[in-house]
Image 1 (cartoon, rainbow, N blue to C red):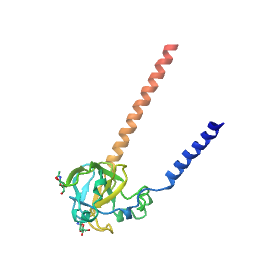
Image 2: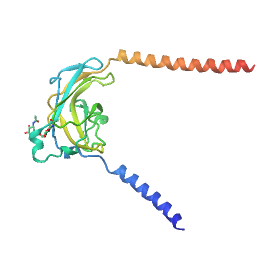
Image 3: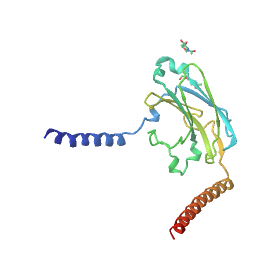
Image 4: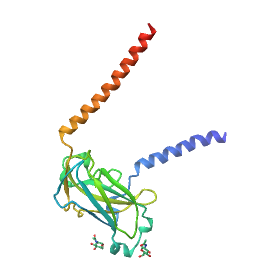
Length: 206
Ligand SMILES: *[C@@H]1O[C@H](CO)[C@@H](O)[C@H](O)[C@H]1NC(C)=O
Ligand SMILES: *[C@@H]1O[C@H](CO)[C@@H](O)[C@H](O)[C@H]1NC(C)=O
């Protein structure tokens, strides 16, 4: 009798947990302290080529800022991301900025995730990946705690995201169509292999 009662109850509880999990969002960007000093090698307005150019990104704790309330004991990782500058977000809902970081579409490309180091400045060389779309970007880094929750950030641009942005030129249409051709060709190869396999099987039966 009792276990009959308990089972639906625990199922209900589980459902509730799932529901709450989906309703409550992520961390709010506006609540994060900017305790990282983040720099990237491209100069304002510099034009870079996806798949060819590389950039150097460095980060470290802003000691002045961190002095008063040093919360960096909770810092575990730094996740560096490429983010769309406002000029490349206009009329593009799929790149929209949201304060809720679970919904935010500003920073869609992860450059690297590195363990947190307190005292030193960490540098990272990043070769711009081929799939990056043509757009204007800046760099932002989120500090994550042991639960991979965002607890602080740093970015190369100012609060209005108006300075220190650079342009990336994506792989041209010619390359894209070559890629598509290669994909079609391999699909064709698989299909014809299947065809001959089936054909041979039938011939054996006869
Ligand atoms: C570090 O933090 C201090 C205090 O908030 C700030 O005035 C300073 O501009 C920051 N330094 C850098 C390089 O961002
Ligand atoms: C980091 O800084 C703290 C305080 O300034 C110091 O006690 C510690 O030895 C430093 N660690 C390294 C690895 O430099």
